[in-house]
Length: 258
Image (cartoon, rainbow, N blue to C red; front, side, top):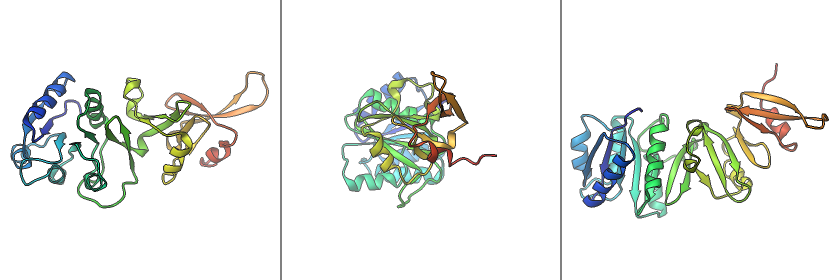
């Protein structure tokens, strides 16, 4: 997606224009709206769908933002960023039916909006669009500021502890990104490992790393500086990650060796 077409749907017209001003400040120029109702937005974009929809959930017409997102995605691959002042369980459940890239709680900062658009522009296909009530086991939603961002599990290269109760996620599309744009999880690695146990490719590799074994390019034998015993390491996207002794066998057993 080189030059994304973005539609802004927000029932508060002043906020809608403010969002457009922010998007232009970020360098995006192909912007439609703002539209205050789902009906108005659909009438304008149905013949030429946008790449990204930034929209409120509660709109002026009969269609909600979730209704409009489902309609857009039924006709093409449109990535959705929701804006909301609500974060109750029912809203979160309804939102996930349309597999959004992110949802931002109002009021949101420039960095939060910028990161959401960045994720939408750089993410691959979201797979099958349209309503679904199934648990989404191919992605996680990571809280960042007042929003949550969708990250495909297959795209994660590694999760690295900051040494305390936070960790950063490195994905394929963020290798050269500003470190400030890397998603951060406010949990220690043990809790992250527990919560991601449903995804077998993410494995604990050391005290500081969880790695995605599907992205391992090489398994290395490293001799320590004293010339004594060898250590095992893996290479992922030019990052050399030493395997902790307690995790080494569980990692290497995943690879067929010839």
